Length: 96
Image (tube, rainbow, N blue to C red; front, side, top):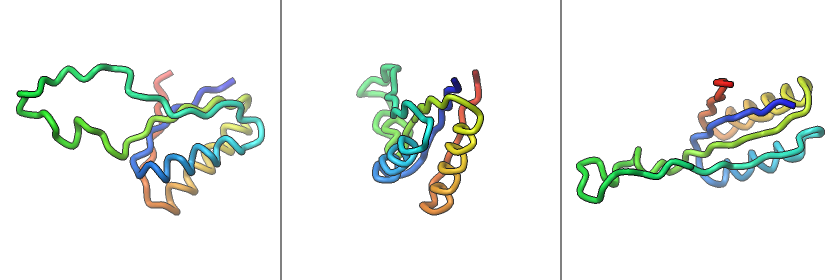
């Protein structure tokens, strides 16, 4: 089973649409938006407190479990088609 991790830079609506589309792909058994697990260490008096990079609005991390290469290819096709259609940025995390 393959675990795909991707980041979507776009609205909540686009992320929700993508999650719904990926969950409907035959063979895909799990799609989940994962939260930021690291606590933010900025203190309220920090010069960078409240900057857009700190709030990460519009940034969504999604994990997809696909059982085989065909399902992985389908996931990538759906992701890329939605990115073109909605004008959002997609990045795959291939660190594993």
